[in-house]
Image (cartoon, rainbow, N blue to C red; front, side, top):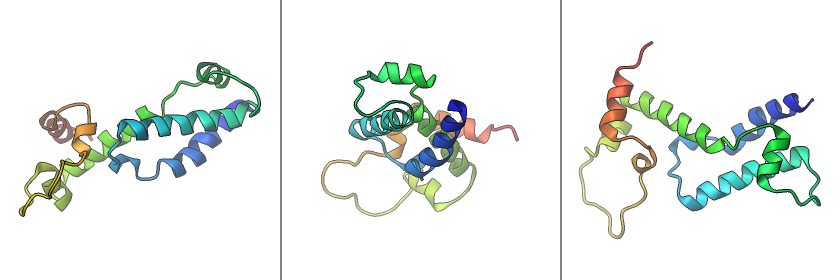
Length: 131
């Protein structure tokens, strides 16, 4: 019964909560909110709301690891590889080939700053993909 619940949560709740998450730029505060959402979902599934149980105990009861951030990172890498293999406007934007003036103020958090490896490494890995 618990495995069925976990599958339903991952299929329905996560797909709605993480819609288009591969294009998000994730700050530390957003990361904390996403992790809090994951813990809230697991608590609702397994434990009553009045029980005082730590996050690690909740994960032990559900027999799950905290993996929603890893899922987002995996989706980001897959999406980035897809974009880098095609010659589209988004690839030009990621490579910084856009013309015009820069905006005023501090630079915004960029998608590429969220990806762990460097841009050149990601580009080579995307081009060398085995079909």
